[in-house]
Length: 156
Image 1 (tube, one colour):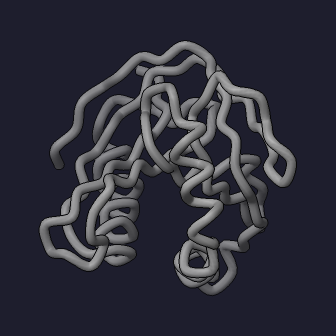
Image 2: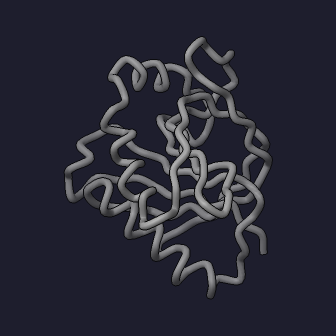
């Protein structure tokens, strides 16, 4: 798996969120549905908010619980939180950043499974206490060459 590590200071993301369950792989169904329902106007506002790394629009998995988590479509930013959006503070962390190439959502979902089932158990790293992030590039998400990333908070 192709990855790099990145250290980031604490930052905030602003966006919209929904709770999603782990039961019966519901998260793998509901998250793509959330993206498909996102109004173009909301996506434009998120892109305009983005002024920090990782830049652009992010998927953020936060507030993990036994039965699920909050999934955010958000942007990393120093700007004020506009009406209709919520803010999430993310602590300073070291991140293992994995390259994802392929059509969405399959390439992202396959890589997530690979990271957690294969890489993490044998890497010498442990999952740190911070949200996970997905970075999405601008482009055709149905292209077999589409590029994105998974950001996992880690400690040695």
